[in-house]
Length: 100
Ligand SMILES: [Zn+2]
Image (cartoon, rainbow, N blue to C red; front, top):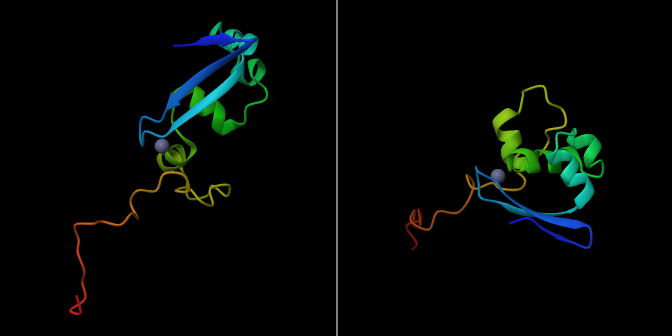
């Protein structure tokens, strides 16, 4: 599943909550260091916090926010940005208007 090409490893993550897929193209050295027990912040310093979480748990930022968002979390402005299915259109609801 993990293939090293030209010093890079492609890792596929799938969010267990919403199925969102993201590919990472990571430096093989850093990835191996992380797998070997190095802190991911040190092994893969180019990743931001959301990407690190994706690699560790697969959970996408939107679902992560949904699971752990706190009322006083000021960074959490658009928690449902990436995978908001709750607001989706329901084709089986039909039309509420008498005109139809
Ligand atoms: Zn998700």
